Image (cartoon, helix red, strand yellow):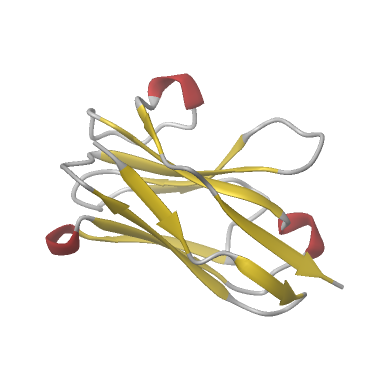
Amino acid sequence: VQLQASGGGLVQAGDSLRLSCVASGRAYGVGWFRQAPGKERELVAAIDWPGRRTAYSDSVKGRFTISRDVAKNTVYLQMDSLKTEDTGVYYCAARRVSSVTSSAPLYEYWGQGTLVTVSS
């Protein structure tokens, strides 16, 4: 499975962005991770197959929404009310198990990352 992430960019605090992750094959559990400069990669949101269960980090809960379009093999991350601390490279990752997990080593496939920069 190959993953193509897109949608990053430079925005101001309070703005919105929508990231997309297109999978070349069947991606069951999918997660969006981010890595800020000097920090470890962390899970932002995850979704199972076909999208009944989701999970979010406490830092984005209520602001970000993960969803998927099964027909398009695409997972989205809608990011609203962006903050400067949301800045980082966002990666989508997929696994062959449907369940939701925050553990990065359990994801077998990774996209190339898309940069999100939120200015004050």
